[in-house]
Image 1: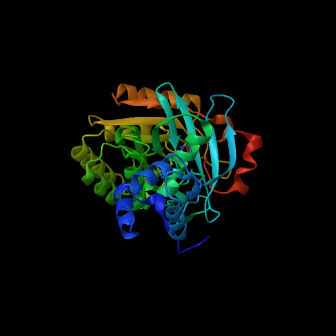
Image 2: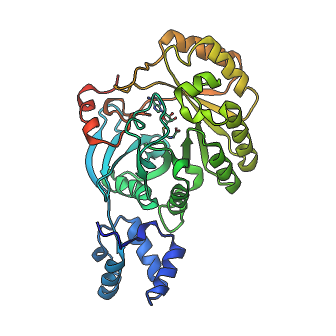
Length: 354
Ligand code: SAH
């Protein structure tokens, strides 16, 4: 890995134009290069509409390090595909491509590992290795699409990592992915999921993007939420809800709350009632899912009976909610089951998802 080379794939077309001028080249080459990068060129020599001299010049200044698909698993149940990518420095991350009636959605990772430490999540097990670069985020979309041959129309930042803990790179990724000359995936087709870093939610809200924000709530009260999500220690549920309200006021975008039902932990009648109080009358949407088993975690999904009692209270309380469909259950592709290590993911191939 040559540290002297720059990451050309993280540059916007405007920056590429400036680079061309710096190199003493004509500006229009920037557009050609950006198009090749969007098409997933693996080498500068593929850029056949550039002169050989320019290609050689680019090689001395920039790297193109496409992610290597180290493993690819396809669900026999619903066609969901999970990729394990090996990055330039050997780090690994996963992405998942899901097919819905309205199009194909990719779930991308934003960090190699995660430092948020949520008690139920597989991604947090090894801690954080590093942030992904904008190009590493974008390449998950480009190379998954290239491999599976399905046009990707939607992106969710719900893979490994906390996107708002990698704020600048994630924002640049959004700019690149939504660029009209690039993948051209509009902000309304992109969702970002956060465990609730309130300052960053505020900062994001100030930009007024038409992005969908999902907030991982998982508990309506501080005692339960802090037990599950250490991030709750700063400010608690009240500060989180205040940030969410500001976000809605600034962007006009309705926030989705994620709530994974965990047996005996956040699924009692008391929790349901508190959740009603918290969400009632506001422009939120609640996504309930059953906790997905993670072998190393003690927590288990709620029973059918608890789910029925819990959802009845929400319905009676006029809370706007849906129960999310699970995809890729046989390949451990569901929420919270993505992990960056290949060694750890090997045994799950046998067991499937519980
Ligand atoms: N860091 C971001 C995005 C990554 S996780 C966040 O916290 O939102 C994507 C979603 O999966 C989050 O809602 C997360 O709370 C949820 N999740 C994590 N582990 C899970 C598990 N074992 N079962 C169900 N959902 C889980």
